[in-house]
Length: 283
Image 1: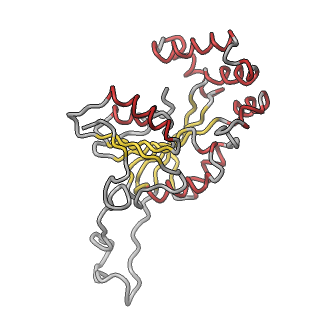
Image 2 (image 1 turned 180 degrees about the vertical axis):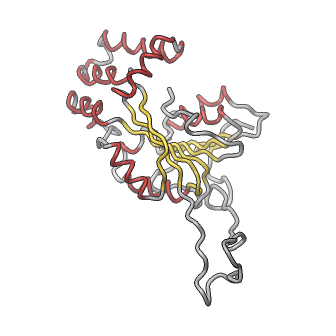
Image 3 (image 1 turned 45 degrees about the horizontal axis):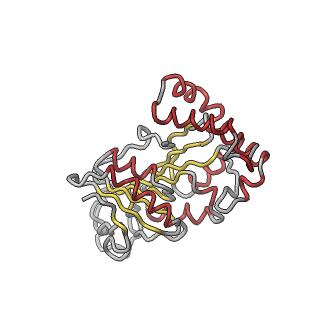
């Protein structure tokens, strides 16, 4: 089940694409399948990474140039060099993390100028119903610890040097499912209505019938469970050096500052290579 729309988040050959807080790998694996890119799946939960690896293996393409990596890491202290990642997906993650601003700061640090960022969080009003119906829903270990205001989160990200360019909603059919789960939280595993609804969602996911697919598209703007926002990291313009000092090449005239303060692009992982990475069976 994808939350990101790759039409709004285009991938280019050779990209390093990070799925931050990948869970069991749904977006990272699809990134790998979408284009000739290097997909990097990062999560703090090692068991989820093992599941992601097992799910990836049937899709591995050993003869291709693309690669798939798994890395256990804290989202507030990522093991990547500055400006080393081309695109980042952070889907349904920030609502779990106490210091989500530190995660946004790390995203800003490692994403290249002009790089793309896709962020998804639970939409406020469907989430409020879940909280109202069940305290356990948000008090369980690893559960949601906040309800985001989408507009406020957008402004926070924009203030970090990003330009917002697209928003949509997703998974409208999942909102009633979670309301039912919250209503019968203690008996959700045996409740016949919840089990029937789950079968419907699985059928929709696997068969993609016209009826439910169309219904969800119509309902997403009204009751989509997730809000999905896309950003482009700003590329600050080079400023001319101050007169009398600074960069040696200050003899450049006009607006041609090419070649000034040029640095070699650092490797994606700090330390000069991919050490510490569990590499997927991709090559």
